[in-house]
Length: 272
Image 1 (tube, rainbow, N blue to C red):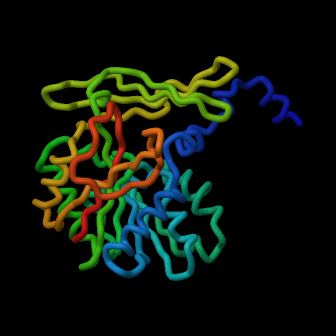
Image 2 (cartoon, helix red, strand yellow):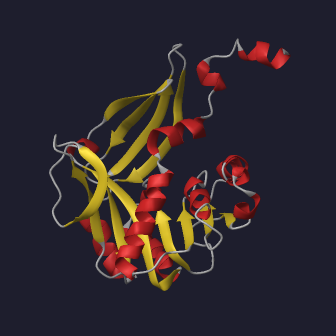
C-alpha cells in the first residue's frame, strides 16, 4: 500500500521505463525477425538458425529470434552492461525456460568480441554509425565478414533524406506519451551529428535526453562501397514500398535508385 501511495505522487516521467518507451517508439522486433528470415531464405534457399545481434541494447531481437523454435539460437553483443542487465531481466528472462538457454548476451566491444560464426548478423538502429571514419567502419565490416558462415548475410539499417541534414525536432504521438527525435547538431563538412530522444507525457512531465547519440551520418553508397571493400558480394538496399496513397506500407524490396524523399529508412542486405 505504501508503495502504491508513493507512486501516486510521482510524475508519469518518473514512473516510466525509458527502455520500454524506446522499443514502443522505434522497434518492431517481430517484423525485423520476419524480414531477416524471409530475406535470408529468398537469397540462400534455406532457413537461418544462428543469429548475432550487434549493439543489441535490450536484446529484443535476439530474444525474439529464439522464440522461433528449438533449432534457433542467438548472441547479443553490447558494450553497455546496464542495458544488457535490463535485457536479461525483461526480455531474455521472460522467454520460456528452454528458449532462454539459447540466448547468450555478451558485454564487449563489437570490434574485439569473438563468437561462433553465425548465419545472420544484425546491426540495427544505426548504432554502427558510431564508427565515424572509413578505416574504423571498414574494420568493423571486416570483423562482421569473419563472423559469418560461408553463406552468411549481414543486415544493417540506414536513414537519409534532406531532413537528415537538418537541425530539427520531430514529435510522434504514441499511446500515453510523445516520442521526440531531436537532431541537435549537424556538421556538413564531417557529417558529425548529435541527436537525442526525449519523451513527453500528458501530465506535462518529460524525460529529456533519455538517449543521446553522436554519429557520423553515412550515406547508402558509402556503406555499400565499404561492404564491398570488406569482401561482401553485391550489397543491396531494400527500400520501403508505397501504398496507393503514396505512403510507406512497411514492405521492403530491393531497389537500385530509391526516391528523393525528405526522410527515409532502409535496410542494407550484404551476402558474404
